[in-house]
Picture: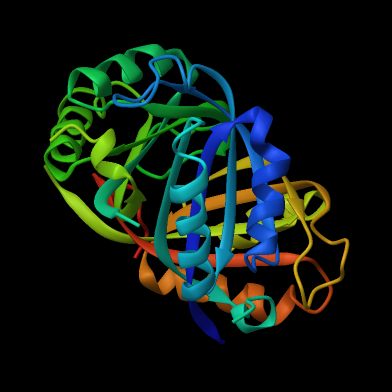
Length: 102
Length: 102
Length: 102
């Protein structure tokens, strides 16, 4: 069994941005993603009501370099104007080499 | 790009507890959370039917000290009387300093 | 407070397989799981349209040996014929010993 080290990114944001964010992560090198609806509640330091109500949670498994590019893009172009939480952690993926673009 | 080390907590429990748990995690210092519905099936050692049907999954990103306080509270006050699964892991959060209360 | 090291497995697959996969993971030693619906989009190297539309996301917390058995089974018996993503990471579980079969 082949397990490949990879990065799992989660982005939680306004429903409005769901297509824009998935387009962006594909452009940066993600080869797939999942998307689901979540309810949320606000975070200190962002607008108080930002995460109230329905939001979208987007997850993607990518290589470290693609993870860096996505997190960079979120940091530079989304935090100023939108409610966005983005976090990343290590995972081990079965047959990861098949769908992780390096 | 600033990535901050943080803890991601997941709590899966009875739908009935959804407001009580989110109130508790905010009281312990969480500044935000997401909540979604999941189907589940029972766990050995808890009541057999506990996780059958609709449950709620609550996730929050917090500092290590807040994570300890939340896990402690869950352990001490919920496990006896409710079906609860709670787990924690390390994540790296973009702009984490903005919404993590220390 | 007792936190136990465990493995969190996520399997994302065709809705069609939701019962087969949950039966399989229980057979391999999982004592519980959660299941939710996610939307997805295709992955390079798998059939192009595999993850388009509604899919199912199954998560289970298990011991390392059970995790190995489940990942092995997914690798050997599902990747050839189905759209499946499977990944694993370390978590720390409150009262984990109560429901982790060793």
